[in-house]
Image (cartoon, rainbow, N blue to C red; front, side, top):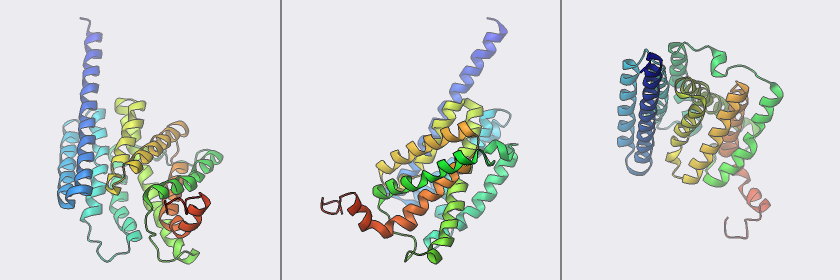
Length: 279
């Protein structure tokens, strides 16, 4: 067999093996999230620690290949849950949990970007076409309303009003919107696309992101988040910027936790649900 065909066949085998490992880790993350939400928070955290350790080891063993870069980027998924469960946040207002947890996550993400040798524009930190980015960002308003219907969460603040909303809104915009888009659509999608293909990277980064919403204990929300994640990844792949999706993600969470809960009666009445037994 010609040397070229042998090399090509070896590359295909290596790619398929890496894909198998990636789906194995996705199943592990999904299982750990199910354990956290349905069985034991402590056991779920230890499963995430085990996954993080395995990913770091595999990244070290394959550091010369693009797959090693992907395993390293994937470490951020279990790390997010470990920090959210392990940091001593008792007594801290829930909205400020995001700010506290985001500090080590921002540091870890910046270190990861440096280790991977990525430039800021390569992970989408560019303005992009402002008309497109603003249009994408405004999608956050209806997306937040849809997710509010799914989850119906309690507000993260005691009363509506600009003084009460301003700081929490900035926290959600930066510490959930920008940070999570940087991790999943900026870094993970980019590195997965380089390692195993753009289409696979789009769907894989979206599946991992959706899995981290299992602890809401709503399969409808997981499917909704998956659809949004795929759409956001496509937008980033098309326009090369995370500006719009970060804004949309932040506005979604602002509406979900700071705005729509205070207009529950008006929303349900507007959709004709007050007298249908749904409210």
